[in-house]
Length: 293
Image 1 (cartoon, helix red, strand yellow):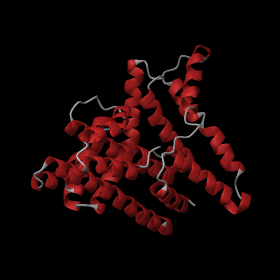
Image 2: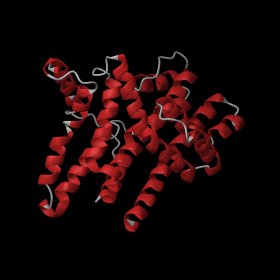
Image 3: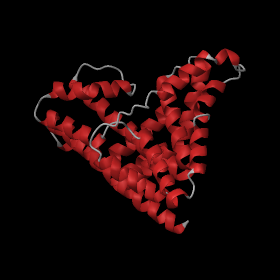
């Protein structure tokens, strides 16, 4: 069922061109706010509130999956799996976003292109920038990190731990971005290390996947140079960026393309193609794992 679910969600994610802003997206913010309002009733244990914020929402999901077993020949369970994984994906169709951005960029309307993506890159934690080249670079970084946290890492934890694992990871990332439960400096640092440790393996799996889907030598060199770094968010992102540059040949693009507008467009197209090929690699590898295991 896991392979079928992954195949379905990847197809839906690719061909569902509209944004997926859901009416239930605000529930986790309301849940965190409720925990904060009632924290005085709970023991003052370190990281108790963040742990409750992630773990307790998993219980209704696990109960629902248990109740749905063997109902309609497993179709109800399959539907739940698909909905949960789709919920963990990005609310934006990344391919459509890149196409719209490139259309404006190649037409020379850099201001409109940057205005379109600037809210997304700032929402992802990037600082404000006032020049087009800087915003373009931030958009490339946004696409890389979104591919990790809103696609490949979700699939990784779903394949290992099922829909509860995918949702738990999604909530971890959402809580880290929101930060309302992590007002204490020590607690924030602890949670940051936890998230870095959780993403340590998926980042390296994704980097190796980039090597299989693109320039193997360039991506594998980056993976080898960064592989044994201790869990750290910045180190993870550095590995991801280096593997992306090596696999997609972004350094080569910079060396051969003389005009900055064309160079930036080629970089973005190369990244988009790499991410699509990597999804195909994952489908092939997962299908082999299903038959072997």
